[in-house]
Image 1 (cartoon, rainbow, N blue to C red):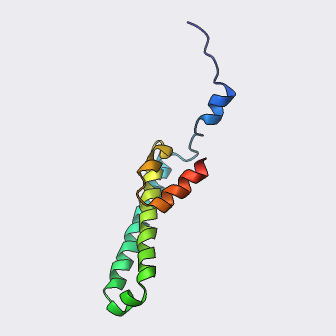
Image 2 (image 1 turned 45 degrees about the horizontal axis):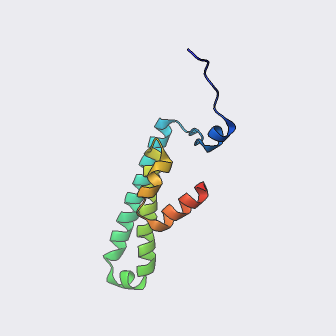
Image 3 (image 1 turned 135 degrees about the horizontal axis):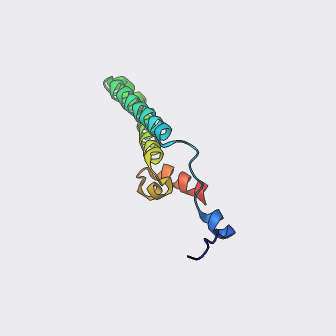
Length: 104
């Protein structure tokens, strides 16, 4: 059996770093993010029941919805064994663009 060859510097630099968080902790963080998403959605729905608030604050209510979507996708990333593989699936374009830009 030939001796094992250590990875080259290029291979080590191109490999994603191991996640410093345990799988259990990542799942707990993901659950908290999903709980936050649900709370934001509930708040938005409650505020929309008041027509005056809804008409006056539509832009901010849409922002609440976007924050909920961001929480959802961040939770998906936390659950993933390979978060970089999830990035192309993110349907919230602004978040996906920001995360992919940080990877480059």
